[in-house]
Every structure is written in C-alpha cells, then in structure tokens.
Image 1 (tube, helix red, strand yellow):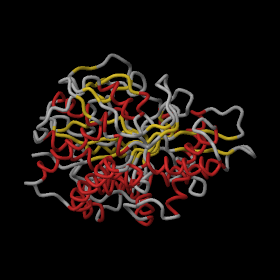
Image 2 (cartoon, helix red, strand yellow):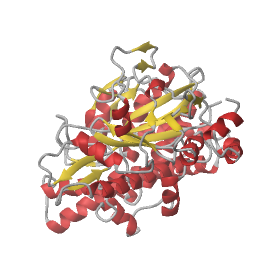
Image 3 (cartoon, helix red, strand yellow):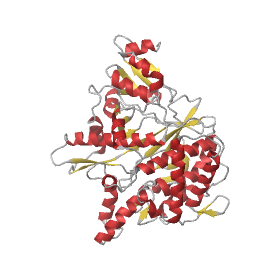
Length: 494
C-alpha cells in the first residue's frame, strides 16, 4: 500500500536589475532575500549539518565537497519563514522552497504564496537600489544566455520501493508529461533544433537519463538521496525535469498526477512497459511538437505519440484507482487529467484557460496577429518573458487572471493566508509555530530538525524525522501550554 503523499516544490526565480550596468546576480539575490524581514534579529541559521547532497539513490556516495557556508554567509543567504518555507540564495537565484503539504491543492496555495513573498521582498529591495534602477523577478526557467534554473518537485516515497522500480516508468512519463504541464517557450536554446514555439521551458537542457547533477548534464530522473526524513523508511524523489508554471490549474495537475503515478509505482500498478528507446531525444522531440503528432520510438521498436503514452498511463491510473478509496482532491485531479488528455487529442487550443503552454501560445499569437509580427521578432520574446513577470501589475499571467481568462484552483484569500501560516497537517506546522512563538530562542532550522539556543545551556536539537508528525492536531496543545522554548522542551521531555 502506497504511503501517504507528502510533497513540496523549490522554485528558482530569474533575477535582473534594470538600469544597473554593474548588475551582479549573487549580490542582488542576497539583497532581495534579506529585504524580506520576518526575523528582525536576522540570526537564525540554516542547519547544513543535516544535509548530504552527494548521496546517490543508486547506493553510493558521489565524490565532491559538501558546501557549508560560514555563520555570517549562512545568515545572509537563508531565511526560514513562519509559514514553514525556506527562502534563500541558491547560486545566482532567489529560491522559494515551499513547506511540506499533503495534497496538490495545498501545493498550489503554498507555491503561489511563494510568488507573493518574492514580490513583497522585490518591492522592499527596490527601495535600496540607486535611483532609476529596478529589480525584476521572473518565474521562468531560462535567461536566454545559455543558463537554465529549476522548478524542483519533491515527493516522499516508500524506501522499500527500489530506485530501479522508480526510474523505469518515470523516464517515459517525464519525457511526455510536458504536453499538459509545460510552461511554453518561444524558440529553442542550448544548441537544440530551431523552432518557433515549444511546450517546455526546460526540455532543451536535459542531456542524460539518470544522474545526480542538477546544473550540468541534467538528468530526466535525478538520483539525489537526501530524504530529509527517516532514511530507513523514506526516500525523497527529487524531480528536476519540470517547468515553473504560472497557471494554478497546471501546477495542480503537475504535482497531483505525478504523486498518484508514484503511488502506482509503490503499489506495483504500472502494468505496461512504455519504455522509450531514447528518452533524452524524446523529451526534446515532444517539446518541439506543438501539434502533438510526433511518433516516438519505443524500446520494442514500435512507435507512439506522447499523447498515446500519457493516455496509457491514464488508463492504468483508472484501473489502479477503481478499487481504491480516494480523497476528493485525488478524484478531482484524475478527472481533470482525463479531461485535459481528451482535449489535447481533439484541439489543444481548447485548453487556453488551463494549461500554461496553450495559454501563452494563444496570448502571443493574438499579439502577433494584431501587430503583424513573426515568431522571430524581439517583441514576441519579450511577451514570453512578461508572462512570467512577478509584478502583479505587469505580469501578463496575472493580467489574464484579473480578467478572468484563466481557471483558478484556489482563492486569493487562501494564498495570502499561506504567506504567514504553515500547513496544519505536516511537521511544517511545528517549524512555523516555533518561529512565530519563540523567534529569539530558535538557533537553527532544517527540514527535519529545529534547534534552540537557551540561555546558559547547550544547543537543544529537536528531530522531526516523521513529516506527518508535528501537526496542529499532534502538537498544537503542547505549543499552547508552552510560553517559552524552554517550557516547550521541558513539556516534550527533552
């Protein structure tokens, strides 16, 4: 029986400073992250001791040096937020890692809350820039200078499921799911075959099937074995092949369907071999095939389109779920996935209120028609970028949202609430509440631990190896009767 779903996303945002000839992305990232001032003392550390990014899920340790910043750099680069998220500098990008959630709808709420956090800190950072300069942030995946940055999905899985069992069905699933969760892009990059428009922001940047790297020779299936939980029980599937989506509907499907596919893998319910002969070649072919007609060579020598492969996954999903009890959100995800696949087979442009690559394509083609422009016009590339602009008054996705031209999954009120409040049903609740209630006594934080620095005492670390503990139901009463961190630790018996 598949384990309960726990998931999250890590969004790396594109950054630039307009009218700054000396623009430095790293110092700009430090500026924007530190402009978000939930922690007035700014002294809480991110606990790198609990991390091991060189562990490979195939059962070995990759050679390399673990990066551990000094205390000053640690504080400058990291913010742990009262909603349970982490907001930090990742190389040359500000990154928002959502708190752990238990369903696709909460994932949408908290990923969108990250967009709000970015915009709040962008406005604050702008006040610190020289006159005339302006910081701009984009939720996309490419700077069109050869650099790509990620949207990483994380899913908790049962460690008893071997990594080989995980990889085999995921290669064809990930190579083809972009037909319904691609963010869309004008042109091609990274020496890929030229095209006017393609489905995915990221597909041009994947060069191998399975590997640990996330920045060079990017793999379709990433092997990082860093569960941030009890490693005897869990593995965390770190998915780097997805796009940063603007559409709530697309985000909902991206994570909701993928989580259900992983449950099928855990339960041995993938009954068809849909292996592709060359998944790396296929992921680019699918992305460049706006008409969804490209035949992909299967490992057995036959051919299928991306839509046929996704439809076969969908048929297996219906068989798998026919005898299982599903919650309302899972039922809704499956229904919407089926509707989207049917529309893709009929006319993809029917999805111009739901799926990012279609929404953007409709928007751009309308502009091109009005202005008499071709796909190679620089204004068209600019329109592509503006779709992902984080400014509510400038971003074209947000404009469509205000005009009621895209379908919503959640409400503005739910998103705003999530900016300052953690999910109630995961350990993120305990993390966020400790930061709210005892900010002066929290010393360091990681996904699976929080440590307290009490006066005249050694650092006390509380482990949180179970992501479904630390919920409001389990620890809410304990927190309410603990006015200080010292009382909390005493009441916990630490």
